[in-house]
Length: 116
Ligand code: DGP
Image (cartoon, rainbow, N blue to C red; front, side):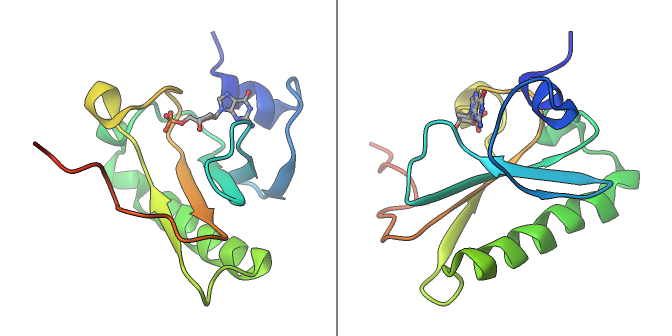
């Protein structure tokens, strides 16, 4: 079964695409948690951060240079933003296709809830 994000990348599911190249696709999150909330996704399906191979290093670097460029284009680079990768259950991962969240456009508050 293709992941939700593979279907978006293939054009089988609608999404607001903001960047596309031969390695990475970026689109707006359907449930935005900030004025800017973009998901930056490798075109090849890597399920979680645990599944990143040594040979994926350049691809992972590319996710971050795309994030940097999108932050600039969205006008949030100077004020600042947050990049998040959730992994597995404790990380709160919902879609098992690796993605970087780019969040910004307003103060984002504490990084995570305090651990009691
Ligand atoms: P995570 O918890 O890190 O796996 O985040 C998954 C994100 O994906 C979550 O913020 C909501 C978003 N999302 C889920 N389904 C869709 C969809 O069909 N389209 C778009 N654009 N985003 C989606």
